[in-house]
Length: 326
Ligand code: PMV
Image (spheres, helix red, strand yellow):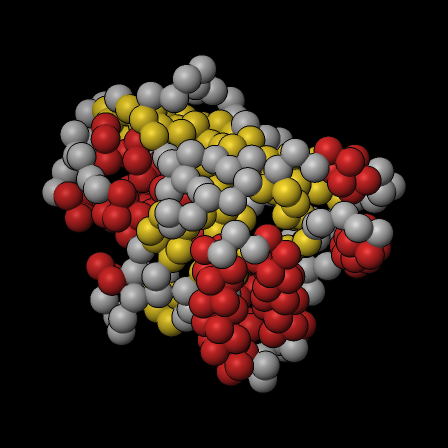
């Protein structure tokens, strides 16, 4: 039996589009920040008496589609490492599910670490990252703490695509603003697949993302938060532009999303250092200097904001977490 904790991550440069659907090999490199306050704890026990994998999520049996996704991922681990027992998987998030917060990154990173450790395997962070990628692409970055870069790799080579932790440290906060929401968004996998297949703007995305990534790494190395923030915003908007031009369109924004974009821009005009990014949903994530309490309060004060998770830089995925949720 093993218990692992992995923290969620938010991309400053987005992964958007696969060149290999099954292996989840991305079209472009991406770069993220791992967050301390949002994490998943997962316990895995292999049991000879089970006839299929079991999944309990936040104290209740998980929906069948989710159980199957986890079971298919466990099949991959069983095939790769040559064992056969089914697993009891018990998982819980430190944040409310259904609030539109990306949990697949922390979930598949925690599952990869717990499931391989429970099988007696001691894998390197790179090997864990490569496996986690096949559960959910962005999960490969949650193996690492701090800033992490996901290398796209070459051709169809599974082993060539994994994340690496960056040495850079920048004292930042990421405020995750949960907005009043309408209907559920298209999932990230479906949204990016439709964008790749139908958006005339997608052809410019790989070069744009690659240029943004190089520039953002240089800005990080220079400790230039304003340049990091500006590049992060630009990259998120470019990603959403490709999605908007898909057929049918992939629109993740709600009216409140645009209201918060403008709120961030107005705060910046008023002298607050803050920059937004948006993933495959309506919520806004804001990068700000660590300790900028006044900016955090100003962000929180907008009437469309239902809940705020203020996050600092989070650690790498690890076994035997303190006060486990499972
Ligand atoms: O790893 P997935 O399939 O949940 O896709 C993540 C996609 C984005 O959140 C929009 C971007 C990213 O790099 O995390």
